[in-house]
Length: 171
Image (cartoon, rainbow, N blue to C red; front, side, top):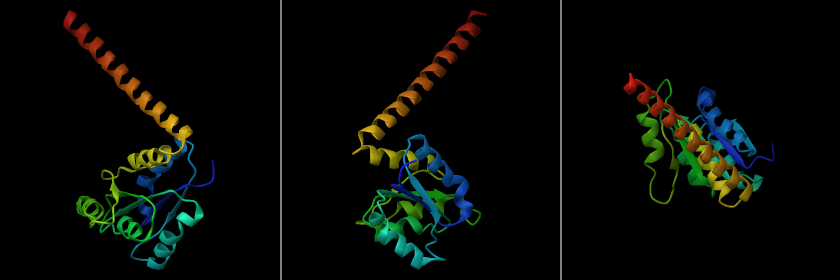
């Protein structure tokens, strides 16, 4: 794997099962990433240092997952010049995930955070890859192949369903 250009951060290790999906997608696309815990509430100094310096370390996109109050993505976006993709995580202290979704989604004007679905780290990984692919032809080609594979999978399933229904209707 190449030098990390995407950072995956989370507020707690309890977010790891969800955030691992982003890492899996980045690995699929052959994109180097790093992953760590950065808590907006328990380690604010670490968060500030991370957000201020990520671009200096060659990071191009930050994927930030958080549950509950979910301040991590927005606080990081307020400090870094990099694009931030927020992943709301349904955690044990969450109000069915809505608190996390709204905390990440409802950012004030001037501080954007791209937000994916609740526990949608897989899509965060794909979106981060797409951002990188906008200026990297090799990654763009891998994304095109991935989307073509998705298309072929749906067409195959549609054909199988139609065949099954056709066989049932013949009986």
